[in-house]
Image 1 (cartoon, rainbow, N blue to C red):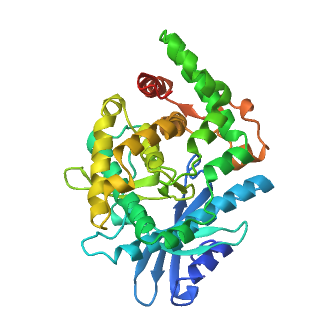
Image 2 (cartoon, rainbow, N blue to C red):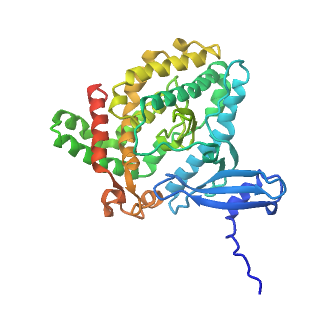
Image 3 (cartoon, rainbow, N blue to C red):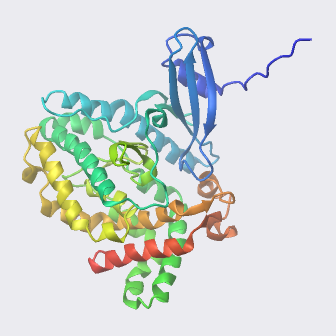
Amino acid sequence: MASTAPQPPPLDEGIAELLKKFCSESLDNYQITVRGGNAKGEGFLGEMTFLEVRSKSTGEELHMIVKCVRPSGSEDTKKLMTSSYLTEIRYYTEILPALVDFQKEFSGVRLLDNFPKCFASIKDLGREKLALVNLVKAGYEMHPKPRPFDFPTVVKVFKTYAEFHAASYALKHHRRERFLELSKNLPNNWILINNNSSMMGKFAEHFFGKVKGFLEDEGEDKISKKFDKYVTNSLNVFIESCTYDGPDGVFLHGDCWSNNMMFKYNASREVEHIKLIDFQLGFVAPPVLDLSYSFYAGADQQQLDRLDELLDIYHTELGENLRKYGCDLNDIYPMETLKADWRRHCRFAMIMGLMVWVTKLATDFTDMPTVNELMDGTTDPDDFEDYGIKFDVEEYRKRSLSLVRHMYERDLL
């Protein structure tokens, strides 16, 4: 009797619907292979499925990642998830393409290619999905989580943001109505996260209590006293520092830690190109929110000491890009405005940096509840030591002390 080869599990209906949006033939004419998904502790607001789609007629292969919203029983959590996915879909299908189309009006401007291709999306409530190119297959890789950025990498990140922000500023300058149209009702999902769930505040206050203990161990009484408000009132400090309603806003990347960037290296392991990924928390605000978050979530003491140099590098690069659009840097975003914005908004970045370093230094997420469980209130985080995250406490001590001392020494705390 002839043996029958095992059949692959049926493709998720929602993913199949997504694939039909861009596949030129019936799905029966494609070999679709699931290559895994994201690990526990990865993908804050969704689940990822890695697919290989091969045309049986042409042999052409597409490697993609499908991002799917996590199901939730809480209306508040559903509202946040929907808002985040619709924001990201809006970036990939409206905002980023509009920036590139605008760039084509200017000779000598390099077209933005610092984000992955989006093949298709679904906006239906509770079923939101995106299909994006898998950048790993194009030679991109993640920066190792526990390792801080070195100086050349920070420079490359800042220059990448300068190019991105310049396109946004130029659009705002030359085509203001178009900018306003694209940004209309674009939410600040950071505030929505904090308004709809106590999870983030509890997470921050728990780990900031540890940081306060580190300061006390070091005899840093003055810093510890100034840091108290982050242990007892981090939520209000966070919301205040990431709220903006002024004239200098641009389209931001938003969630700027290293896991939301992909790096391509040359033969000498120097960063050749960066792709920005995950725009779920993108919104309109000053560039320093992207800069400070990426910096404080990735820098060690050596880079922290070179902040002024890095701001000069960013500002110079921003100006060089703006000139290609016929814009004057000092009219658009002078250095004194950048520094004032940094002073006003960098506490947002410090709070995120201190939380992200816990994740970056984690060694095991096995016991960690899902984000939905925490946000829905179906799981009490107090039932889990350190939220179920096992992490390198001594390395966290080093990173957090460097960052908090940096903030104190610059009178930013």
